[in-house]
Length: 123
Image (cartoon, rainbow, N blue to C red; front, top):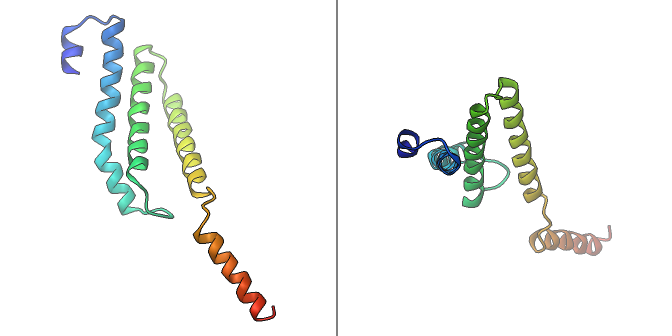
C-alpha cells in the first residue's frame, strides 16, 4: 500500500488498488481483536471462524467506504456514524437469522420426547 501511495499517480487503477489494500489491511488487522472480543464476551452459542472473518471484513469494508467518502470530501461525522450503525444492524440481522434457523434433530427430538412423557403420565 505504501508503494501505491508514494509512487503512483491517482488514476483509476492505483486508486482501486488503494481501496483493495485498505480493506485487506483493516480486515487482517482486526481479525485477532474480533476473535478475542468474541471469546471474551460470548454470545448465545460458540461462534465459528466464518463469523469472525465476516465481522473482520465488515471493519475492512467500513474503512474502505470511509476512505472513499473522504477522497470525495463528502464524509461527515454523522454519515460515518450512520454507515457504522447500518453495518452493525446488518450484522445483527445476519446473526439473528443464524440463531433462529430451524435445525431438525435435537430440538425436535426433545419436544417429541416431552410429548411422549406427557402422554405416559396422563397429562
